Length: 329
Image 1 (tube, rainbow, N blue to C red):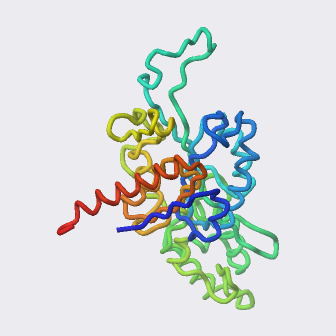
Image 2 (image 1 turned 120 degrees about the vertical axis):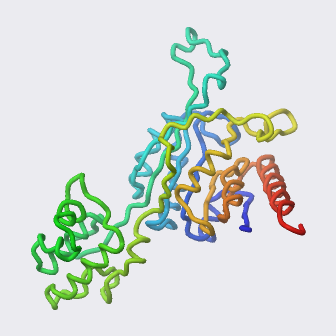
Image 3 (image 1 turned 90 degrees about the horizontal axis):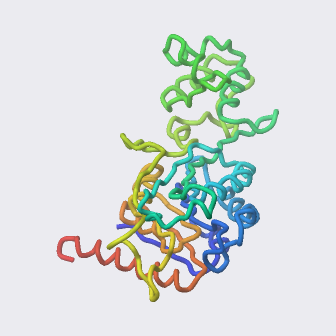
């Protein structure tokens, strides 16, 4: 059974003592002035997110996936900040809450637009970069650079991998058709380059200058992804209601509580059992609840006392439910 750490305060004060995240679930400011501290407009979001994104970048590894929840305009304005700090866009997922979300209460003639029933959850990965005498290179650039540095003709990459043309066509191409070489293929062409390449330049495909990367190390040079058959980038899931909805003293505890089913989906997709999941803007800590239930370890922070105490109670209830299901509990 995994643990959950929920800190009271600003996540900026805790990042340095949390372990490196395998997934970060960011469900932070939307620029709607919907709670104390939420910026008044989406235009203020880049400034609000900047220090957090910088901290994520310092602690993340190539294994890390970021799931960035926001409104469409909030994401659009925040994207340049993420890109500038080395986060690579992967996919935009649209949460369609259905017509029941507005229940016919939106006056389109007054608002001058169609009713909004969506939010986005955008997947980013941490871009792997390699230091070379010619500057930082992407994974795609570095592979070809190292092979050329070995003084070998490009056609021999196919011989090294034992394929007809997949190596030149996929693993060493510099166009948009580039493919990440599977670990076993990486190990084969790295061994080939170190055996047949110019002895003066050895080791090739190394990051420490002492030995080439192993297949296992190469596998950790990109983010995890566990594909779930039948899932697309449009998530038609109703807004949280009934038993899952957390209530406070005066109604709903949080107006934008995320469904546990969606939190479980993104955590399953990007982590394995035992991995660390960060939730910097805890709120009701839905990602942390989901992470614990899936055998991951959650790390969350929340600034507002009411949200914090409610989240702690929610985690405690989830823990009690888990205990009650254990034999002889």
